[in-house]
Image (cartoon, rainbow, N blue to C red; front, side, top):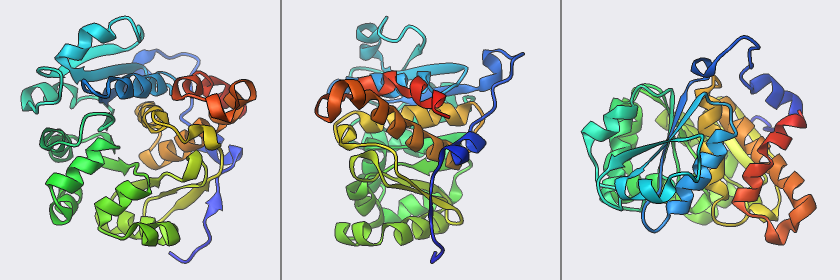
Amino acid sequence: MEEKICVLTAADIKNMLPRRMKNSNKGDYGRAAIVAGGARYSGAAVLAAQGALSGGAGYTALCVPEKLVFPLMGKLPEALLLPLSRGREWKFSAKRCAKILPYRAIAAGMGMGNTKQTAKVVGFFLQRYTGKLLIDADGLNALSAYFGATNVKRAFLQKKCEVLLTPHPAEFSHLTGLPLQQVLENAETEVQKYAAENGVTVLLKGASGAMSIIGDGTRAYYNATGNSGQAKGGSGDTLSGLICSLSASGASLFEAACAGAYLAGKAAEIAVQTTGEYSLTASKEAEYIGAAFLTL
């Protein structure tokens, strides 16, 4: 815990990225499922799927409540639309959620709503899923609110899947029960401690997307790419989708978290050359993820 944490470099990211084979097909790069959205935050689902479509997975499925399927038709032609809940908001159904258990990576929580139903969906994946699970935003908030710290820890320790948590400092404070100021002042130590004690990887998002910390209890990095243009709603959704896709295509969750944070930040750095930091949007950031890959 006292070891110096290095800042991610382009060379680090090149070594972490899954290799693309010349003689390959979409089945070689895995399936990524984005479990997101609701009537109030339907945009979170779209932004996360945009990030996933730029990350290399062979298939991307956007999983939403069924009444969002029709409004989203055609917005993301490369993504499969799967209704995993009745109505406009999330209502847990084990039968429906089981449809994506064969997927290589799942990202859940973005815009789902901080509700007991969201907690049940995420809890189901923690209990039943055996792949790579990213939990973000409302997924984290709902676990904190409806499971409680003791039950959350039990769920993490009993899980069958790899788990990555992607909180911002306030969400990490709720999850751990630590005062926000303590999280801000001792972020490196608290991330590594929580990751080690719960058997998870943590990406603690930094201010404006830059200086995030990624740790799994034994390894840790800082990411320094990014700018203040990312300090807007939607940037975290795009990041979650990107990380999910990278892990589906072959990276470990730790590697995918490092690469995703670096590439999203680099995309923002490239994008602001035309938009400026005031006007950067998460959608525009997603457009430049390909350019970020090319910088490597």
